[in-house]
Length: 349
Image (tube, rainbow, N blue to C red; front, side, top):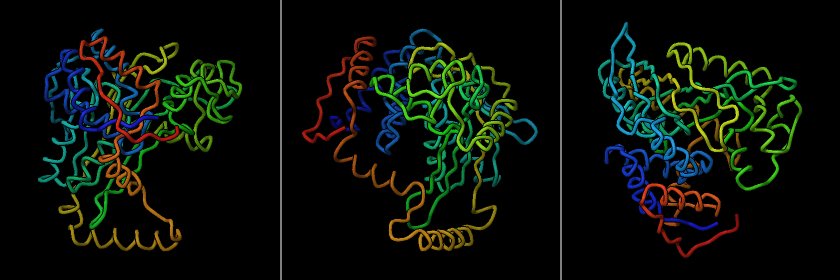
């Protein structure tokens, strides 16, 4: 495992995205989101996705310069994303929702035809850093099923929420409805290692430790029927309300990601809904009770990621050789060579 400077890596990836036809500003935003995802410790949803996004941008499956438009309809803001790169479009949507929440208090949003959003907690975090509460959910193609199923039945449909915390980093919670994110299976396949039992089933519905068999089968939901129920909630909000009908990922190459998904989010302004002082005081009270009950090592979601991000601003982000090789392929494909030198610090994988 070698460590790479976050600023240099973000600048290089922005150049690679721009070489695929993206507008320079959008390329910088998309690259920054992916690198920051790594910086906050979500290794499976950051720059390891760069190669597949570049392939989709070059093939036209993702639009390098989408026509993003907004429509107000019956109290809901609809964003028609034009199949743009999710990491470039979603920050723009959050900015728009945050701006409107300054006047309306609560802003529900449907995003139509957007590229794979990966770590959706990054966008909830963006809203929380602007002082807002946010919830976001994304539909995915069917990749999850209960044991015994002969094919994937529903998406693992991630959801995330975030809140500002006075005097501390935002609270950020981000999960998929599967026991683990599918990105962990993709990483295992890339690194040619087994996965634990309980992560996935093969195409015959049998538990498997083979990541390639898992990719041909389905992910298992967390907590059985409860995970399926969460996935169905997200399917209603982000899938059925948006009308998203992305192509199935069955048989897709490892690392692939759906290109036309739907998302649902809302942004709420504590100033207008509850009053900032009252909201902050209530948050402080229950978080303190939570910490006291959790013992000396207790923390709320988002604290560890914030500390890790601050640390990695200096140490760089760790990348395994398999991901580095994919970044070199990105450089060869786009004509923007990956020439980043690792920092002096190294660590065991």
